[in-house]
Image (cartoon, rainbow, N blue to C red; front, side, top):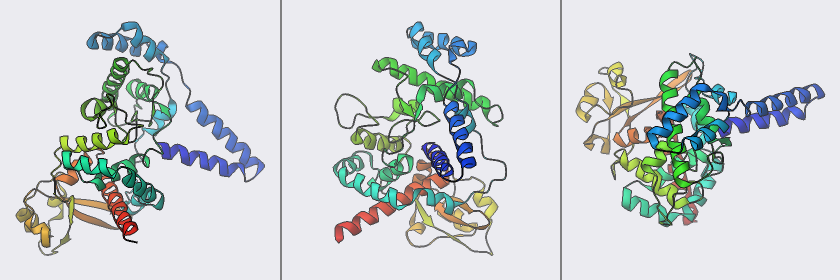
Length: 361
């Protein structure tokens, strides 16, 4: 992700100011990072070229155009490295995760984005039912409102993950197939739009624009919210806002439903294993939830849909728990992580509260 690359750059810069030996080491690391952004073109990769021929036939695209485009893509070792899963046993920590996204920089940028696009956010809520704070939270967590959208060529990232996904990953075959599908969608989009497939930049996973949509998400959910005849997820806040809202509505966002409720436990009745078994998928009615020892109060007791017990681990400290609703689950369809969903919710809330305070002063 851009944050990883930024951290590496800052580390190198700091090392260069330390000692001559450290500076020399930093220069070597910088050269190594640059080399990781270069690779062998896929024109010499037989499997990739066979796939290009098959894809061109499936999509009724010009075979030579597809072969040339994919042939100029490059294998990036850094992309494969970044896709490696964390070491087994790495503890999750909600407080640390939260601190990466709920900070003054994002909150200030979120206030400005909301102020600049208030009418669009209100229109999106009217049309799709998704409140502004959720849309603002997503765009802030993903790219700080367009400040960090990625500096990998999309075609390089997708080709690398399609044909050189790390074998050590436990889901290597499945993920490789997924990225081949994304590469196919990307090339089809670029050909349809008559744009150079080597120009778009994005994350190391091939996501682009302010909302970091994968190519298949662009095809399915991106909308021309400013009605200018084109979809622009990098330069049009209107299209970004409308597309994020459409994404959530398509996954079943329910207007007016909270994302979660506070929850505590009745130690005498608690069956935490049963409550956590469905993971974050809302499964329990209020009655069955409380029967297993979860304690709800106020509006939560009137909730009519299913609930999930969501656990947010804090390293060696005690975990935090919430009762997640179907809307909480919808947010995890953007990124399949309860930690991500909570970061989106809390950033949106912080921006909303800060904006209200600023308007009242």
